[in-house]
Image: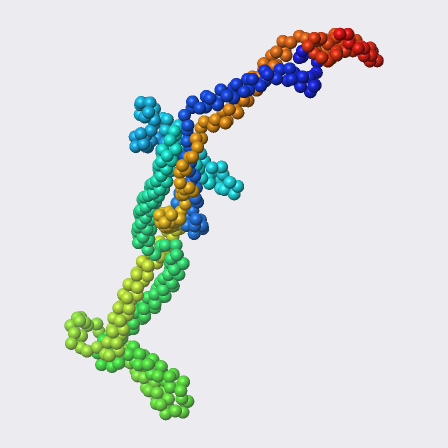
Length: 512
């Protein structure tokens, strides 16, 4: 009588002892039935193989892999491609799979798809994130040899797909890098052309020539000052020589009219003699004969000058009517000829100085213009240089990446770049993987036990009899005074009636 009180181990043992056949019979019957049912299920044989996903064996510091991705994602994508209808149909047709019941081709392909399982291997400690150590392939069919052949075929498809995928990815990446390198080279050449054209049009005004332009500007200004001063001196000398020429011409003409030397001519000769005397006095004393002679000549010239001035006052010169006609065939004095030559040389020197001055002024304007536009040129030059350096950096970086990619491709072609490596060939199963008949029998036995326990529980819940004094006490809430057991005439054991009073126990012999 369940549910009225708390039961102990003895109560449960008693129940099992009373209801043992309800527990044993269903367990035996269901285990036998399950085993018999498993005998009717067709055998399924499972062929397996394992594949290792190897990483690149050469250090990344030497050759960087061209493709880095999630190996689990790669396996998933590859699995979807290989287990597609297009790829499985040739296998179904080649091995004539699932054709015993006349199924349509689509259903046969679906059954083969369901019979193939690709299971990733659990990542080990120390493995990089998203990097699988490998995977396994299981093919379950009714024929062990056929399962092995199909498993080998699927393994070959995975290996071929890995090689083809790697080659395709490598070719795509190399084509992409080559195209990027060509575009980067075109950009770099365009920037080089812009920079060269800018240098050609701004030659002399570039930032690195600013200091030279300032130095040239200063030097040109200094040269202009020197040429200007030299020009001023030449013009002054020319003016002096022209003045002296006019005086000597006037004196010479006066001398020709009067027949005596003019005061101007005498003054010129006197000045010359005085200069020669000063030169001699620097070297000799006044007692030196040459000095004395030169002093004597000077005294005579002074006397001649006084006489000429007196004569000119008494006989003033008469102006000639036609000076050019009167002096056309007359040879001028040497001093006048020298003066004319000096004036001509001075004219040439003045012309040359003016030409130099004009050239220096033009150069000064050029250098001044370069210095003034230097900040703007420097800004534009900096932008062009920055763009040129950026384009060259992009080009060099892409060249480096392309070379690394080429090394990675060559490494993969030599099977050193990682990939799928089969650990063992497809196995040939020697016993069916399904059904496991012992497992079926064990399942039936467990189901029978569960069914027996359920029946026992149901019967115990419906049983209203009192079997122990605890049942009476739990129901009536009163102490038990006596228990009358069930008398079984076939039993040879003497029954007893037990009277139990509150606080004492008395046992009397049972009546037969």
